[in-house]
Image (cartoon, rainbow, N blue to C red; front, side, top):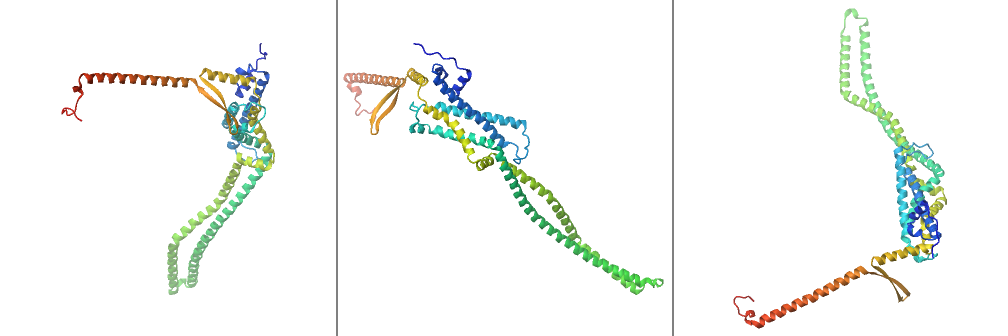
Length: 424
């Protein structure tokens, strides 16, 4: 009886089998139903890897790409960064693909029926948890890409509101600093004005005395300088000396006040430049909120049920192959694989024995494995030890017989009591 011939599978079909972790050698001998099953599972695994590749690339670009206001035209990324994004996306996709392929290939058929029992779910629980985590990792970047317009709109509002609040804080802080500098400037101008006022008092007094002397000598030029004019001149000289002393006394203070006034004026003028620089920092700080975490937060705020639908779709794609394999009934392919595994075990000296026991909760099925090479090595070792024991007993018996004959022939040679040449 010959098997039904099937057409040779294409390279794409063989690749999908490989993605599902199936053995192409046995699928070539299997009916079309088994071929389609594993090609479908491999297609899901491949699509999951492709989605992970796109998701990882977008996540990398969003997290490390140029930052700006969400609605503004962003700075173009460099060619090096774009290459890095593509490489990261490919690497991330391959990681997820390999994990999914391992999860699917390591998931058995359960009880071989098309129903998923609670026991099967508990056995697959570690794989389900891993698939759940991977579903989160893949869906988050995809959902912010799908909801990009809505997220950008809300994010732009948040960034500009944040910038305005930071600018108001900066304005308040710089206003306080400017008020302190203006107060210092008024105090310094007051000190300089007081100095100029005192200096003007000396100048006015000297000018008054000079005018008085001029009037005194106006009608007496022919007679020369009289006693009154001389007295006035002496007073003028005394006032000028007093003025010089005052100027010398206040010289260091005035120099310090002028230096402080110049520095204060420069600080006031530089405040405007510092404030503009602070505005720039506030904008850059607002730009940093265009990263991955803030976008995910906004997507759940404005997206409603959409992000959860996207997550559930990705989760179905991610976890589908696990449940599909638990729902698949055993077919020719599975029996051929089991037969090959049993054959390999037998060829390598491993035998499986089924044992059934009656327990308190019913019949218990247990599997016991025998390792023939280990058993043979154990028996060989036991035989060698038994033979070695017999040989040792024979040697000891022979030695005992020899010694007994020597004692019988010459007892004195073996009698050592009271012998001074021997020690007890």
